Amino acid sequence: MAHADSGAEPPAASNPNEGSEPGPYQTRKRSTSRGSSVVDVVRRLSQEFESSRPHEAFAAATSDIASTMAAGQPKAHTDKATGASGEKNRLSDNGSRPAASSEAVTIVPTADAGDAATKPFENGYHFPPKYSRQESTKQTLTSFWKFFTTPMGFFWTIYGLNVVAWGGMLFLLLCNAAPAMCYPNCDDIDSPRRKWVEWDSQILTALFCVPAFGLAPWRFRDFWYLLKYRFKSDQTGIRRLAGIHAEWFRLKGSDQLAADVGPDHIPADTPVECIPIPESSMAVAPRTGIRAPATSVWKMDFVVWSMVMNTLAQVGLCGIMWGMNRYDRPSWTTGFLVALGMVIAMVGGFVMFLEGKKVKSTEGVALTDRDHQKLADDKEKGVYHYNNIKGKKPKRKQQDPEK
Image 1 (cartoon, one colour):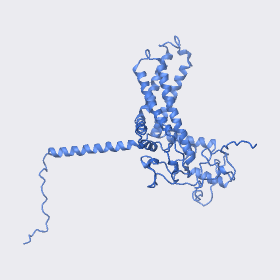
Image 2 (cartoon, one colour; image 1 turned 60 degrees about the vertical axis):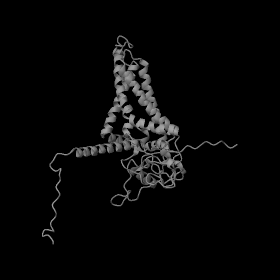
Image 3 (cartoon, rainbow, N blue to C red; image 1 turned 120 degrees about the horizontal axis):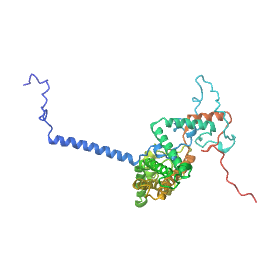
Image 4 (cartoon, rainbow, N blue to C red; image 1 turned 180 degrees about the vertical axis):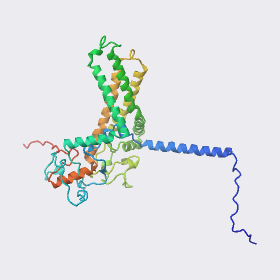
């Protein structure tokens, strides 16, 4: 027999814990879920740190500075391989060609149309054109202003000015440029000159701590990867370093890969020793269609060791400057540690700059809208630019005279 209220929903089951205080099991379950979420966050941050890079301004990585910075515009065409801009971009709203500006007719080093050094690569790529000194200066100031108006740009500009100002003052004091401060004499420990030398040195020590200690986590991470490769023969170490320093470092055998291989296209048969970790950090396919040769691993050794030594030298400098007073501190220790830290970091950065420039001169750099426009306009006027990163006529090797 059917019930009269068969269509009605059955009453919801009552919760025995409703309205009561949570039991110990519920509290333990909630705390466990919180703990697992914290562990997940820590694990995610750890994985991101393995392949992360410090801020470009913070790292002061000279190899990251584009070769076209002096003439660059905000947005670059990274997906175009050809050097000629489209007809649509070069026409005004009414369909006529815009009049050439005074910048377009500025005298710059150019070449003849028949010169082989002006020909584009097989895929049509052409390096950015050479700009006049006036244009380059204008664009450099514009780029610097855009950088300066950002929070990081403002901070690092003020930081750099402080280093230059206090460092210049210390240099003048060491050269006895202020004889009035030598009272009773220049070498007296209580003379104004010696006091200002001490104050300058303390301020510079604090300023040098910013990059030395701020970059220490990334530097020692790279050092660990290098040790894994050197002492354990673990290829993942050098592959991770190749991904972190993809701007200037190329793995062994990567120059044999096809020209279209990049982070978005990695065939299944690609040797793993030629692929950085993670794969997304692999350098883009060469714009010129030519791959840069493999980088010697000893250069990676030198760069990583130089950055670590810079941090260790700063540790020693802080210990000397802040652990000893100026009466008992040996005068030679300060100058030695400051010179050691600065010179070795500068040499390491210079190696990165040279290798990065070598890679860019082979694989090419991104062109901006302004670069495409200038190349197209100058070609119409019969003005041709040398197709290399310097925009200059390549030097020919001297041949022995015929006997």
